[in-house]
Image (cartoon, rainbow, N blue to C red; front, side, top):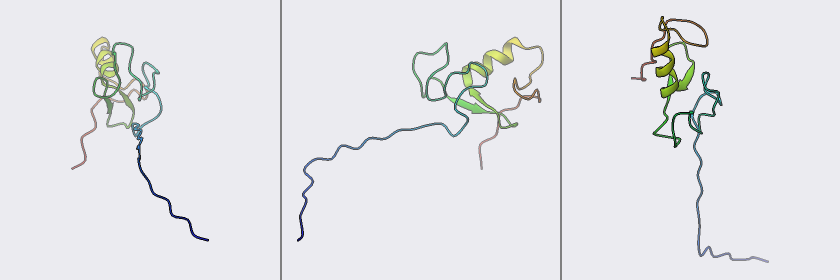
Length: 87
């Protein structure tokens, strides 16, 4: 017994997530959410990685670095350097 199914309408749904830990190491907010000083997730609150492999919201690490006497990662205390994009 064979049945034939005809699809009349299709509604696709997608989701995205950052390739990092679940939360920012500074504000502890999820990366797919937004840091305390932003209204919207995504382009308004990008995630950046350091050469040490720790990830933070861009706004959080900028605020951290501007308030610190030394430019160090808040997680491992290595000298902070943004990770270079893969070439």
